[in-house]
Length: 511
Image (cartoon, rainbow, N blue to C red):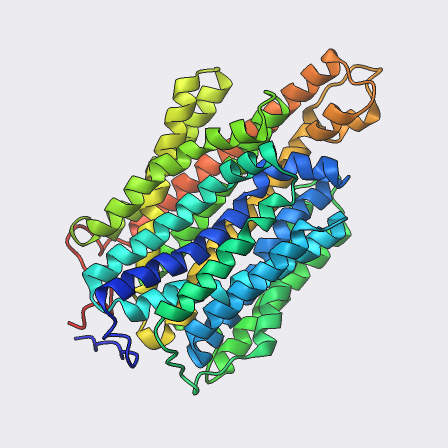
């Protein structure tokens, strides 16, 4: 028998209306975070042009956000366990709002990159709190599964709607509007959050280790630099070896420290639970595929097909249309279907959808392109929503903050790896396969965006550049489909004991 989780004082007495209002409030915070992660996909060409940013700077404008957030998430979740998740949620909102204003008024790429890093600090503070508050407020397992599914659907939909919101704003306003829109939403969320969130029930015995947080951040930075450098055509052996050394040594030192601490930032023993580990793996893989699909598709249709930011955003919105019903239904029927079918099967369906999307693009079949995006959303929506349930439901309530942090790290690392690896691949394959006329401007050989803006670019140059970018798009989509397929196999094997009718949570019911 498993013991019932300790209940926070006052949390179990929350009225039904207050519980669901809390869900809407923390969901709003999550929506802001996920929108800000993907809103730049459609805005990237505009930002590159307006700020005169290089392609490398453009990728760092995107990467700074998930990189800093991922490095801080483990520490912020533990801080929530110690000081209270309500305080962390509100403090994170305030920082997020201030950073949004700074980003909206950034005069240079460097300032925008710094502002994106500050945005990540606010997001890292409030993101684990959103899921942890749900974990302690909804004590009934069936109700909590539905609440987490709503939370998960907002994460999926927010990421998918980011390109649309960015496209709409850029159609009518300056690029700074994609950040400025956060400010009034933050103000409203702070007011409502203070009113409905349960009183803080901190665990002072929990300790936050600053050194561990630094070690985690250094390790992640080394890994991202390694991924980006390996994917470059003109890679430097020195940088590759240096980044690899930082990554390996940083991870070794981090793990060694966690095993010696009485209150580790990351309790590695929780990964022995197959459902927990499968949820982490599924979340990372799903976000990797979704981030790569959105980045590559919005860039391809803007740069090659001449779509506006809004048009390309509406195109990839098909992912959101597919993911919303499946993410909600998955939570409602999890107790019947089981984790194995929804996670492993969802990733497999997502892989089939990516393959269909690629086939539709390659053959100019619009209905198949849209159908592929819808099927991708259908599969990933189901997998991601129950992945969150698998993660948060398989730890005791007193470690909800740490589990939430691990869950968010998996999501953010998936997005981070997608931009670092697949964003670099877009440029690498382009430069390796482009065949320009002899009189083409040299800038056209660097990237598709440079080919469009280089002086003296003619139809022949654009045709050759478009063909090369098509090669890049093909490779990126194949990688996305392959990663999803492998993830489906691995999670299905890991979850062999979590078939239809099996328990999804080790701590949910207390039985």
